[in-house]
Length: 283
Image 1 (cartoon, rainbow, N blue to C red):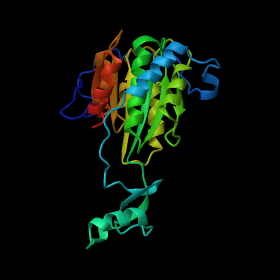
Image 2 (image 1 turned 120 degrees about the horizontal axis):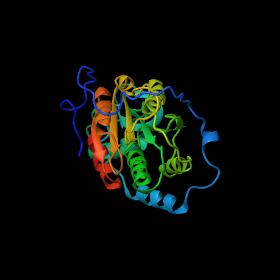
Image 3 (image 1 turned 30 degrees about the vertical axis):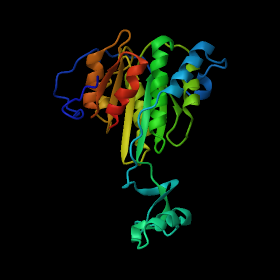
Image 4 (image 1 turned 90 degrees about the horizontal axis):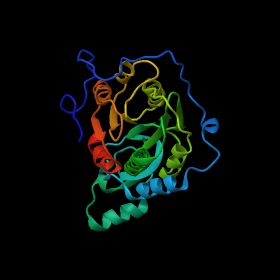
């Protein structure tokens, strides 16, 4: 189930009544951790790792059609119809088109252009407690599904507990299998500081020049360390919440974060719910 807040997406309206435990605040200081000091030297549990990789290979959300209005930029080279910008003709593709169109139009010429990323996504994963059981399955499903869907865009990964770490920045491509390996090598943690996780994610999105900048928060929303995360949520252009409901969870706070973050809210009870939910969240 995906809850469409205020029709399509949340409005960021602070005048609506708040729910959940978000008013709980503590004075505990959070810090951004360096990946090198964070990851354990030992390999993750072989059974857990094998399960996560099987899910990653099996799950993917459907690909979206290419956006012909993508902007020119400094990213990857792509073959596109001539739009009076580039004069770097892709001869092979142009010849293929001209064999079917004896009287060509200007736009039948295919050129090579560097494309700007159309969408940047920061995935924010709650690793507080133990990364085992259904929790690790849902994390694997989310990483795999987003990696498959964002093949033409950029994905960053933030892991959080009472602290947080940027495991992969937007400008660095990392395969889904390696992202999962990094998540599984983070030692089990206790408290959950959603506010600081959103702080790290917002800072990463602030560096982006993409037309669409999105954060996806995977958490049970049991916020028990740090300031109230709701005031920070409203600073996001688009913040979606995947709420893990297989154990203790705070649905009102999760819904508040999505509403204030101009996003959507989707409770997920198991890893098989993740891909359909992401299809709706990122439409």
